[in-house]
Every structure is written in structure tokens, then in C-alpha cells.
Amino acid sequence: MSNPEQYMRRALELAQIAADQDEVPIGAVVVNPATGEIVAEAHNLSEHGKEATAHAELLAMQQACAKLGQKRLWDMDLYVTLEPCTMCAAAISFMRIKTLYFGATDKKGGAVTSGVRFYESPTCHHKPEIINGLCMEDCAKLLKDFFRNKRDKNC
Image 1 (cartoon, helix red, strand yellow):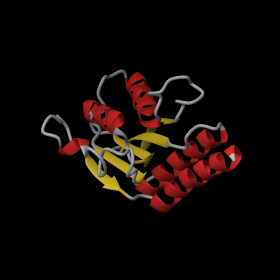
Image 2 (tube, helix red, strand yellow):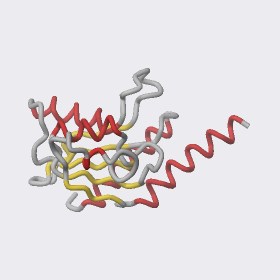
Image 3 (cartoon, one colour):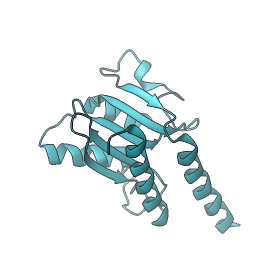
Image 4 (cartoon, one colour):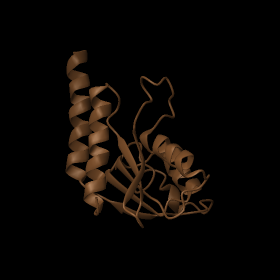
């Protein structure tokens, strides 16, 4: 893989796996841009993992740290299918992610370009480069279809 869209497509595949497991369909991939290697990847596990904080981006970053044997992810990129929430935006800052790519905007729960805009806070210690809207339509469609199906089943 060599371009951002390919990494987001992998995150979308992971999001689909989550949807197939009845998890909120969000996928995340940590990439070393110097080598093009996918260091870690994950999808949401907060429903069946019985852990409310088991968001895709947190799980992927934790796996990357474990694999690399370090507590920060300097010079790593993170691809996630949905705009991170406040918790994940803070973790991304603490991990020192170089570039954050996200697909769909989350006007209700997002914290990067929506909501609290965490990286604009004077208490934020590290702001990654932010590239949003990558594969936005596909990311948004997967989420909309998932929640529409959930609503249809509950009627």
C-alpha cells in the first residue's frame, strides 16, 4: 500500500467486520508513513467487548505501542473511518500521532472539526496534522446503513 486512500479502504474493511459482528462500524489503522507498513489495526469492540472505551482508534494505538515497544507513536499516521470523539482525540494527542486521517464527520460526537474541537484547546499539548473527508461518502454510508438496519429491526 502506498497512498492514503488505500489505508482508509483497509479501515473501511475493518469497519465492515465490526458491522458484521453487530459493533458500531468504525475501523482504524496505524501506519508508519516512512515504510508504508500497517503497524496495527482494529475495529470497535465496545458492544461485545463489554468495554465502553474499546474504540477502534484506541485499540489500534494500544496495539501499535505494544508491537513497537514504546509509549508514544511519533511519526505514525492514524486512519479512522469516523471523526474521533473527545476521548480518542485526547489519546491521539497523548500518543503524538503525526497525521490523523478521518473519513466521515461526526457532528454529534466528534471532537476534531465538530463539537469541542479538542486540538484548538489551549490545554492540548500536541496537535496532529488533520486530513478529513478521505473516502467520506463510503465511511458515512456504512454508518448510516448500520444504524438504519438497527432501527428497522427494532420496529
